[in-house]
Length: 195
Image (cartoon, rainbow, N blue to C red; front, side, top):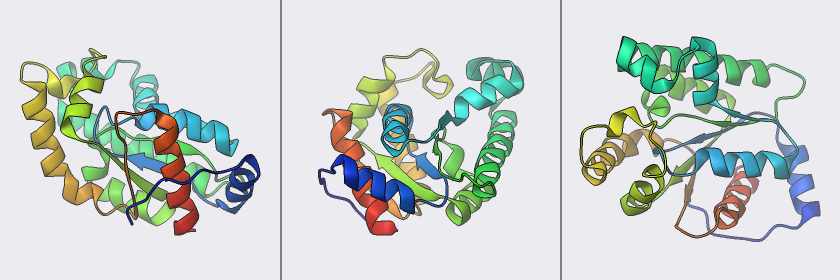
């Protein structure tokens, strides 16, 4: 479902939060705003936020670029799969399942990870135009897949390759170049419609 923007009151957000009975997982390309939107969404819903990339780095005791350089992308993806599985299943099976989890850009392309997320979480595809992704990813130097190439070409190709996977998420929200509050309102609307 594609979501249009709606404004939510504090009372409506609190009522929506009470209806959420599983983790909320944000999927989409690097630079789309999963972490920024996720942190603000978690604050509004009064629940924890976890960035899967941060958890991977904590578990490996290495940065993501270091993992890529030392062990390669396949090793990273396997660790990513295990960390996301732990985050989703721990919360889904706990007495407090509400949490917002931001995944890495390639996580949802893994068949096992995607199936686990779709079965146990409210899955939201945050989408954006390639130009917006290029602008946002230029702010950070920790993007191993963008090293040594034209970011516009790489992001465009990755977005096209990954779109069929992302499209399996039941909620699709487009994030523009405007303030994140617009995207967050669309996410809240998508969750409300999905529930």
